[in-house]
Amino acid sequence: MRPHRALRVAFLLSACLLIASPAQAYLDPGTGSMLLSAVIGVAAAVALAVKMFWYRLIGLFRGKGRGDGREEAKGSPAADE
Image (cartoon, rainbow, N blue to C red; front, top):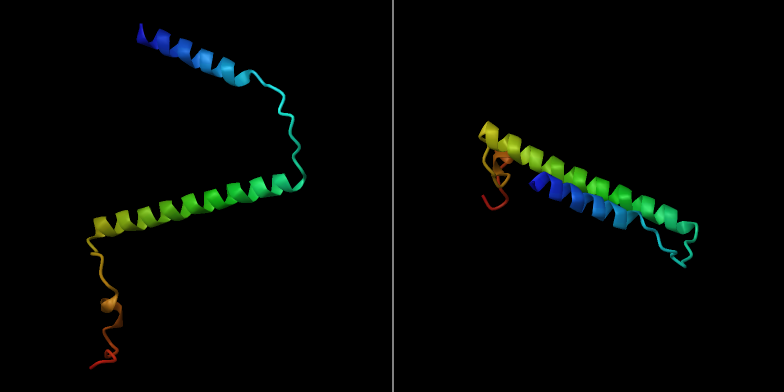
């Protein structure tokens, strides 16, 4: 009987969301470009987070530790030596 109750709740929720009330608001033409730039910004942030997580996951499987970057500069002496 659980799926029947979940279906009833989903139907009631969708019915409440379909009822539209008048907004009594004005949206100027710049609002569309603002919303578009916000959506692009969120998409870029999510893509960066996924990329960082992916590289960290791949590094974990390859066995590379989180170094401090000193391994890359082995050929050049440090300034204090």
